Image 1 (spheres, rainbow, N blue to C red):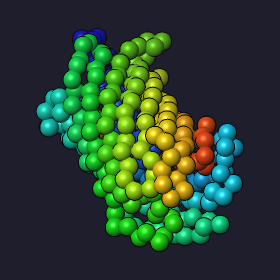
Image 2 (image 1 turned 90 degrees about the vertical axis):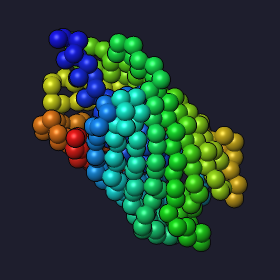
Image 3 (image 1 turned 90 degrees about the horizontal axis):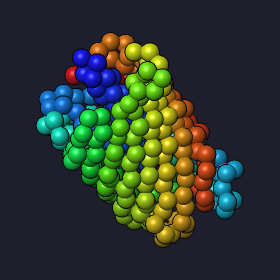
Length: 270
């Protein structure tokens, strides 16, 4: 019975990784959902870009921007080992001087499949493939530059559930490669997550998102890298509903501006 309760707690903790508001991708951790169960997350995010204060080579011509995003994330267990994911989004982005521009409308629509390939006790490994379809592009609009081409994202994920100070916790590692069409360079991705439940209905979640471009792009897109931290608190209202609030901050970057942001989300499990 103890093992079963711990397994359910770990699974609940792993669901928190689904609610990430990290803008560039669907990130769902290593765990798959049980067959015919699902999760719907509605989230709002706000981020602001500043010139890189952690950067080795900041871009003095970088424009400041403010971005507001709304997403609906849906995950469904096709089988116990295969999970389908879709995520449409809408965004509003203001680009300030020296390249003033405004974009408001649809963002990327993302479609992913995640397959569990290994599981033993509380350790799980999965692979994930994602296709991101861009909205209709407005090429002259600089507020949409770099977000007009289709993308793919290929990942291998590993997760482990354990107890820390007699509290259920989990750790998750993900690495992969994202292909980007158009001007931006493709990217290597490496993400980390740690979650712990200090009490049954509360989860503290720390995530780290890392991206390194595979060389330089074209049209002025340089080789760049960034590391972002996101700290979230999730509260389970009941077995179906949860709410989340979190903060996002770039902690290191190279030739790309830093970001500071806040997210909020409501989950519905079924």
